[in-house]
Image (cartoon, rainbow, N blue to C red; front, side, top):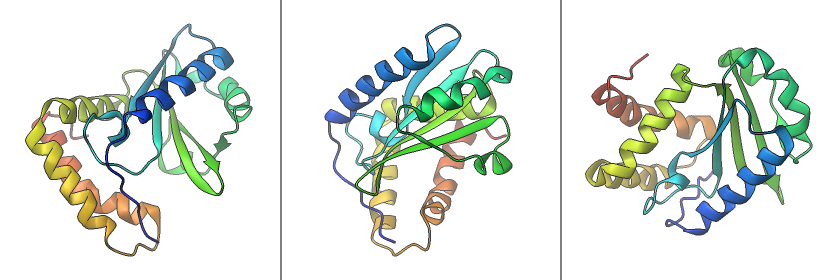
Length: 170
């Protein structure tokens, strides 16, 4: 499996804003925060053209009530993901058999929330590490991968290093 990394596209911000509006209309705004995360949310950073969305809930105990409304927006719910990441729900959207969106539903201020928000914000502010991350992703994209997760794991050392700079190792 090849991972396709594309140059930064400012349309990614628009695609996120459109999706955020749809999600808000579907699940409401009270006690819900919707953030654009990962590489498509960082101006100037090349990325897989997949919009990553993080939804934070004030109280995760109500998360099950959001599954059907999110599925109604053409997302696929991956219940098995919860075995690996308790207190998290994962969804994805496809178009023509290609993923276009990933959506994580988590508790606001959980370790997952904090790590992803801090990493995004750090890359937005730190050009040297943003460029190093981009180089790593481009180099990794030249390999053939058994699964998408193998590619993700190959980036984890870099990510954990940034998290340690931010005191986010959990």
